[in-house]
Length: 103
Image (cartoon, rainbow, N blue to C red; front, side):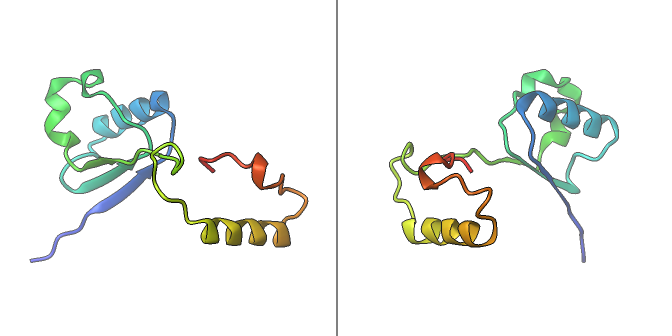
């Protein structure tokens, strides 16, 4: 038996995430055949209860900065990324202290 799942990655603010999901629910592109990966958490209360069964298969990824989460940081990888940025786009590199931790 074979089955297919469609994967949707939604990277948007919470306001737009709710609007996009509501449109997707109305278009029947949310449910068991779809895996939605969201960058923001959503409240199920913002959707009609009749849609709840279709909201299965949604995964939310929360951003966390290592320093805030008391987790170790891979400085070797971070410095390598800075070096690549400086080498290929030096005009846009603001300096490592000016880079947002969530970037």
